[in-house]
Amino acid sequence: MRTEPTLRIPLGILLLLAGLGAYALGVAWASQWIELLPVSAQTVIYIVLGVAWLLPLRRFLIWMETGRFR
Image: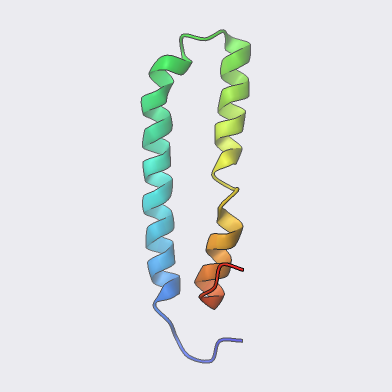
């Protein structure tokens, strides 16, 4: 258990917001090619992209709390 304050949490929140913003901009940029696909393919792609950002989140939150990635 953490007993003293650390800069990892505020820094982690800022990095998370910046990363999510960059990810959203990347998806928005890629949408110009995704929109050329059939609607069913677009649906699958946007569902996958909507969930993909969650994959690294667990390790990132562990790092914010403990300073380790495991």
